[in-house]
Image (tube, rainbow, N blue to C red; front, side, top):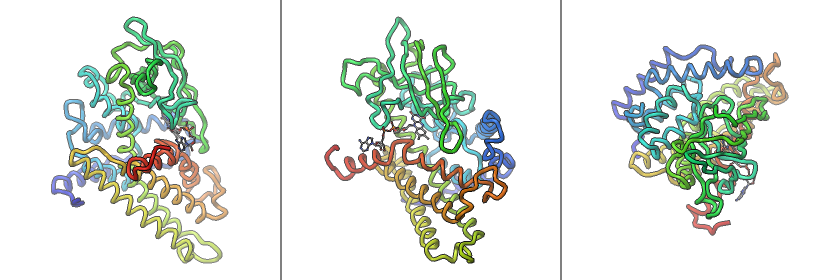
Length: 398
Ligand SMILES: Cc1cc2nc3c(=O)[nH]c(=O)nc-3n(C[C@H](O)[C@H](O)[C@H](O)COP(=O)(O)OP(=O)(O)OC[C@H]3O[C@@H](n4cnc5c(N)ncnc54)[C@H](O)[C@@H]3O)c2cc1C
């Protein structure tokens, strides 16, 4: 594995860095963090404009083929971009589920019409996507999903419910898994639909999270009529198509997150230098120093696991179980980092956004609470361990 960039990749890094220097929206993180004071739609408008700017500059969809709006570059450039965005503390990409998951799956399985129709609007943020997989009785055991799609002429009629659907309240399209054949083994009767969220019969109800934000939702389908041209990858082939989306989800997670973890660690160290505990700087406390050093070691290991995953991709191989190990390692390190941030703040940890004396405006409290979801979203930690147990260690199925 060679971690050095080629001269072309170095000049790509310079191009991204210079562009970010000129185009970053000023003060965006303070505006988003104070989201209880600012209506969510305003935050989404800011993020939508930001994605449009990135798109116009050619920095979205780097690895996608040129004919579908991408740049035909490699995952090394994608990693460089993620690093530069994190270093510049740039806003996230709003249509992350479209760019990271829906687009690549449509490019892999779509008809030529579908590939021309959807990917360009995903990149430009003209159409936002969400992922309709989980149901009240189908999360880890996704194959037990019960939302039904029944054929009626050229249409499918959808009835059922999804839950925990991130961004459904702003989404125009959903990656929907629904049961089209209840009489065959569970995995074989599922179809993947590209569902227009504005169709009659689709109802979205936001769910409030621990952080106070409502960024995920319940979605109800009441006789929603979807044209057969909206099936992706063939009727009853939804399990294979759906797993492809999950593979891209782990990839998308893997790239940005370990870089953001390194930035969060730098922020934590800065805070620890400023805070005092029992009359001395926190950084002089031997136990705290041990914990911070361990976080640095774990973060460096994650960086190398990420590099290993990229090497596989560059060789044309699919991501292997290191994607599960990387996700778990990231969750564990990130949650420990957020817990340590609270420990460093001591009694101040109780002061949230809105309190004058909150450390750094209460940003750490928000990220601490949000980090609790990390071990659930994108496949729980127990499920990742099962994957490692079965596929790496060859243990029998539980
Ligand atoms: C912030 C957030 C955003 C999300 N966004 C989306 C989204 O956009 N779209 C979407 O479709 N879903 C989304 N989800 C849902 C997420 O994918 C599910 O919550 C997750 O897959 C777990 O499913 P569940 O909640 O039904 O829990 P369950 O599957 O009921 O699990 C409950 C507990 O049992 C454990 N468990 C279950 N099965 C096993 C097993 N075989 N062995 C060992 N332990 C087991 C689990 O690890 C967990 O601790 C989101 C979740 C969160 C928290």
